[in-house]
Image (spheres, rainbow, N blue to C red):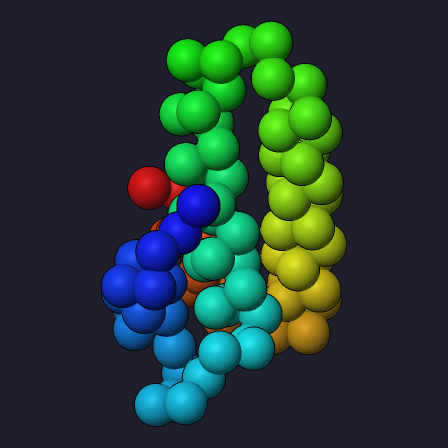
Length: 87
């Protein structure tokens, strides 16, 4: 689970403007951070199938956001891939 401070830090890294919370870049960054944390959880708790299902949903959601961004704004897509996804 992401704490409020972690969310603010992630948003600050990729936000387009000061009050940006819903742009595809921010959503992709938030999903990437949640996926990263849930992956760590699943390494310790490999039988937690409910969390695994949630993880698969988040990965699919992030993939949809990335596909949308690639179709509408290729330059922004390249930037977000370098910042967040390929860490």
